[in-house]
Length: 124
Image 1 (cartoon, rainbow, N blue to C red):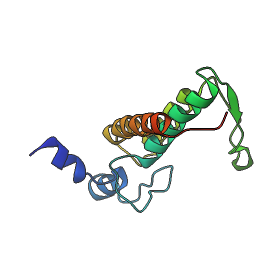
Image 2: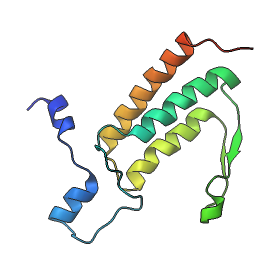
Image 3: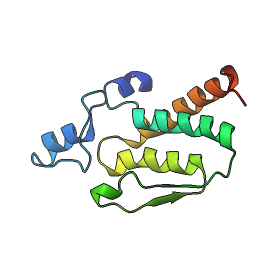
């Protein structure tokens, strides 16, 4: 079977684990109601990182406090790309995506971000 065709047929980790290993297992993150492949979170995070890096520079450090109210600590980042990498891999750690979906999502996001910065003009 063609590997590209196989990627289309991939089900979420929760589905396989429940069917073959543990019917009660649930991922740390809620499984979204759309396909596993590719990781949309990885796409949008990388596209945003590429675009924001173009606007604000390579080493734009910032802190993210959006999850503090849920008991998580403030996250410090040295660059938008670092934040996008963490956002992407979180989908694997959260149990809702496989690595290939994350990797391809990052690649797609890189392309989308480059398209945006090469085709959209901003006011300065």
